[in-house]
Length: 509
Image 1 (cartoon, rainbow, N blue to C red):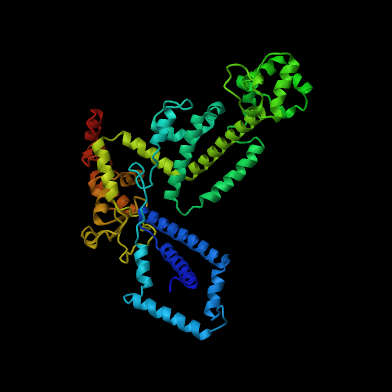
Image 2: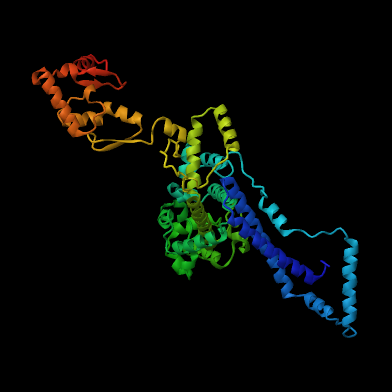
């Protein structure tokens, strides 16, 4: 049954629909950890790739280049070489179905829901190095070694390399034109692409690069590519470039003679040709290379001891420009990926700095803790806390236990008019506030000493009346602030004013 083309088509459509439902189910779930989120992204990416490949097969079937689908449909209608026989076609197909079930008697019906649940729990295999810590950090150690051991690189620490690898503007373009830098940039771009595909599998990297290439072509044509604007000026300052003459600008030998004998001699020497003769002979010899490849020139034009024919001037210049353009394009793609991975780069810097202060045992212990730790990134803070009794919040942001609330009387509110109607919750907090600066300051503003006689007094009028009674009983001149006014140190000890001042002068408090 499954061997028929129409059955293959039907099964392919069913697979596509099942994968689409599976993707929707998977994306409706909110992964609790970063690891689960990465697994989810790779599952969806794998399903999308499967849908694309299955759809491509369906397109080939519907195009029907070999007319196999057309012939099978005709056979279903009973059309044969001798004519149309519907009953014969029907019984042939019935015989085929019976034969299939006779050979596969144990075939069972697969429950789609059970299969979906198994696929949703699947953990795709994602290759990460130990340094990458499952996609949290970059592992650029090999590229770092390649950088510091090159002519264009500098001897810096790995932490400093993480700051400069995405900024190649400080490297002169002369060093960028070398083979060593091109290989380094290719390796760096290859690693960033591979890392980005592993950590962000749902991103369309081809679309991102197509946009980068379009912007790059526009900037390159206008000479606005960052770091390559002064390429022409630096070419003029490079003595090696003086030996190369672009022959596309000269249409006759007479025009080429105006360059001068010395420049003609340098250009001929760079191509391995003879440099002797008059100015006209030199110009004629060099002009031959404009339309004739060096490989087809007569050997008599080449100098003795030369390494054989080389490329002509215009071709060499064109290839140099294309090579530099390719390197500049790789830099543009690398910068774009660095921007997309900026958060990961910052985390890598912090991890490198932190590891420099740890011993090997501490690093191993931290790595084991990271492997076993369950990263709870749920939205607990956004959820409303259930607190029907309106209990006070503890240090962890949750309501305190009810027994603790009753034990300390935290449900009682005490207001002190002397403290500016400030509220104190619980008896303990209310008793302690008489020794705090807020209450002491309020008493001083009223001109009343903060003594133990005024404990439990929170009303301004009551405090003033009590102070008047004390003055009448003791007399105005009998008030001794040095002995009766109280002060409290940081440890909560109570002293009179005289004792407190003496201890403060001696530096004991």
